[in-house]
Length: 70
Image (tube, rainbow, N blue to C red; front, side):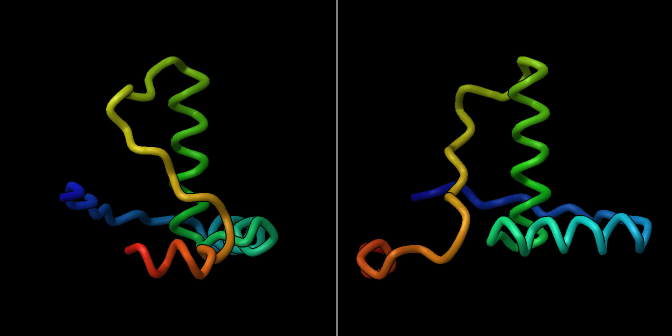
């Protein structure tokens, strides 16, 4: 059974949010997915990404066969 995902309230400057949302759309991710992607990349570059962290799903919609398995 997968562990429950944590929820975090994040306050952003509206201009930062808009830029992030545009970047997410260009990468075929949700804004939330883009934030997680960037946080994981920063953690990895700093050598602080836990080995126990599950891989993040790739951008875009899951393939039909992947949806049927879930």
